[in-house]
Image 1 (cartoon, rainbow, N blue to C red):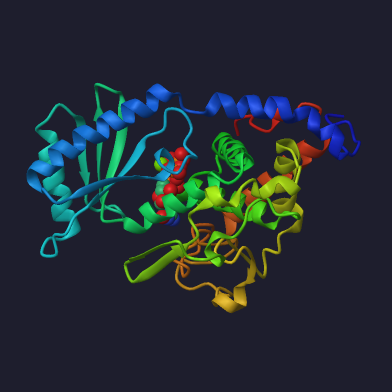
Image 2 (image 1 turned 180 degrees about the horizontal axis):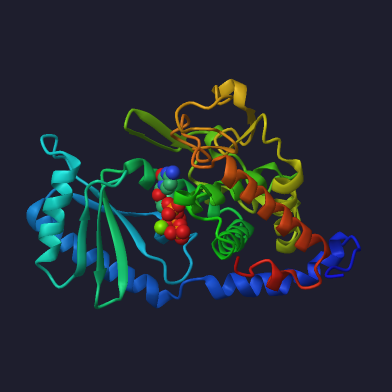
Length: 335
Ligand code: CTP
Ligand code: MG
């Protein structure tokens, strides 16, 4: 009734390339927004350096990994060597410093899992979260940004998947669904697994960038401009990739045994990681390995209820891509 029950072939699906690309374009932040973000960071840097002259500020998350859509908040990390001061003290002090300037709604959230200062800049209208010494996030931000430079289809696919996840209410870690970071890793992994591959596995290549953060060595090939047009042997279009992504997570992923790993560029087994049983609150019902903090499963927030919600959403999306004459509307209908 609702769907024309007829299987789409690859060429049929390509009629949706134009609308999908239009959605992608509409989500890209305009240049002036980027300028305003830089303005705000410059102001913060000025204020912070008065108190801590050697401290540094780094942008991380979607404002710096190239997967940020228009009007996002910005994530900032304060890198500071204050061995004698605990994080919540630094947070309190930082909030104090920023309070005294023209910033609005400065809040110190010292009891959060990751303590942060939240604030809003009335000049630019931008909100931002500042955390302390979360340098792994700064490094994984660079990894994501470097992957995005290799093939334009990654950014297109990730924007569409993130937009879908937000529209459908499955981008809320406190409700047991997945973070934006997890969805981007799922997209990178998916493009690594296409044949021919659209993305390489940068951590399996020669090391050209290496830092050690919190005792974790983060090393990979970051001179991606030297890869040329890496994915050009694969001519899959954005509509085909969106369809294939949902098809994979709806019908092909082995939820019982498989872990997706951007680090390895392949699927690895839960057994190998000892992620086969519930330990504490970590259930491992969908397993996404963090590329650097490899003991961290980004799916650990997912519980018995939310795994069902997620899988039903993947199936719904796959069905729409397969049968709906107008998937670009239906796919993003609010939940
Ligand atoms: N991050 C992380 N480990 C997690 C979640 C997040 O290291 N389990 C870091 C990553 O560097 C990520 C950043 O925190 O880029 C922000 O995470 P998130 O809010 O999920 O992603 P954004 O890219 O900021 O997405 P959004 O556009 O939804 O804000
Ligand atoms: Mg963010």
